[in-house]
Image (cartoon, rainbow, N blue to C red):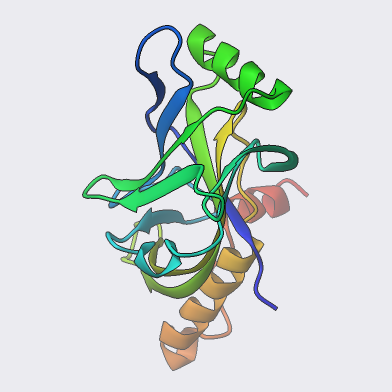
Length: 193
């Protein structure tokens, strides 16, 4: 079963227009930009990775909460595009509690990051001696939502971690297959026993 993954990026999100405007614009993902370390690897998104998913019925949610719906592509209230920077989204904040709260938090600067929820169609891994492995998202299979977020937590990376282990097992020389490196945090944890 494919596992939905969530990523949080410190990318531009803002209100556009005059003081009365309710237009929200942001980037849910930025291409060719390495993430922070995520459980022993970094991640980047290849340009065009979202092209096949732009036709999905995607929601704009606040903090990935389905109870805080802000816009939707199917209804025409959410616009998504892929440009040279990344996955761009824009919508008019609804005149709802969630929409009004979001606008207030954007004006105050309390909310400044974006996120997206997805499943992967195609990925690649690279690893050089002494460097952290890099997972590249080549193609997104399904895009569930784009979300302004208040607090970036570490993403749910269990599906990505499993594919890193598979990559290492496939590329390890035969004599080293049994000794796949454990994540750094686990090495420290085990050495403290």
